[in-house]
Image 1 (cartoon, rainbow over the protein chains, first blue to last red):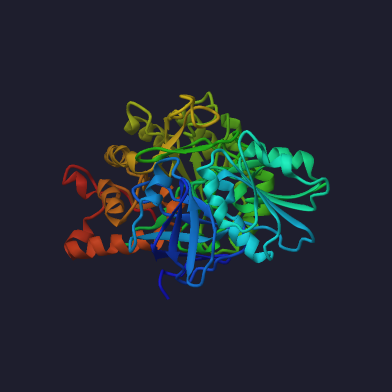
Image 2: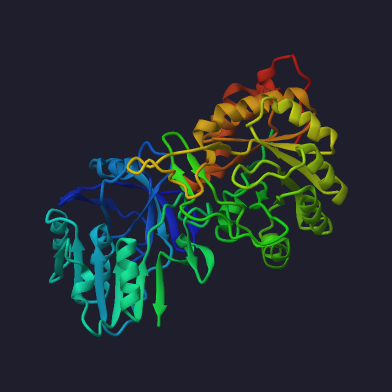
Length: 231
Length: 291
């Protein structure tokens, strides 16, 4: 067994080799060999070593082809740029799967994503049998990532994903920028929203990623990143 | 020689990651205060070029919640438990120490005299140690800040006040601005700076304090590998704690321990015997043992 076998729940930590990465619009689809890591439940995340940086970066799994783990990454800072610059046969430490993913026991799922929030949707869509999806992007170039999902409705700013929400949307499973998630939460009675926060560790050690839940600060890496709400 | 490997307070939740806690020679809790604390608003952390900033703000369940819900579970891990104690006055320190005094499951009390992210107690470190000393017969470690002009003087003062050991060092206050907004990245503004950038500062503090007082020292600050741990021991530390490293590598305790053993082995038996305080040459008496 590669790696030294640390087990945190179902999570393991291993050094994984980089496969052939792809450019998807402004994003990079980083492919890693899977090793003995479990791909986990859609919406769960992995901590990826960012070469040259002090802290790893949390990334939700985008695709789980046989023997691989694929992550969609937007190069927005030094850590994500280092990850996008990885080349085939490089290797990085990966810890996961971590956190709570989406509850797949839903009757009428509708996937909604904004920008890099599309990252967990392909794996989620596969798990749910390709339900309808609405994607929003800030430019046509970013919208090229829509190829990762079949048959999704796509809007580009200034249009917003909330404009396409049907009157009775069923269960909305969403990931995207905070204002988008807040807007969905205000409009939709049953939601599962995947939130984002800066994380140092991803496994409950640092208390850096707290979000307010029922008036208390909870660690998003443990309580989430998917938080469920039913009105 | 064996160098115990601990975690730095606030850098591991043993109940969420028991396997990591079991890989340590002792587990140090997040700081416990008299009353529960929600902590500081997010964002609480920011990565820097050579370290990270945090401003967690001592989020904890309070001493009653800790004793009722946390300590019994921690005890079942069968790792020696060090409880980090904090507060905003000498009375706070005394209150928490007094509550811990009768707990057999608490091996050591570490006094967090130097959190950079909350208001400081008005008393001096020595007065806080004296208050704690009066409240408990537990082994007391004083955790000192590197942000002082003469850390050796602080060490002498807390030693005189009854500290049994030193934890060196806490984080040092730093600030980072967002590249776009030029506002602090952390909600509260500054945060405690930790990681590799802190290493030479920690080493200097351990070196100065080991020469000044005859107390065991837990050295910490930016350790990433066995060689870094070796440096701290050579400067006078009797144990080494891992902080920021645990965030990126929960398997670090076993790795650092093995690397340290290899470093010592490579230098030979004679070296191992005189390792602790080796950086001081013959100018100091050997610091006391941690155990």
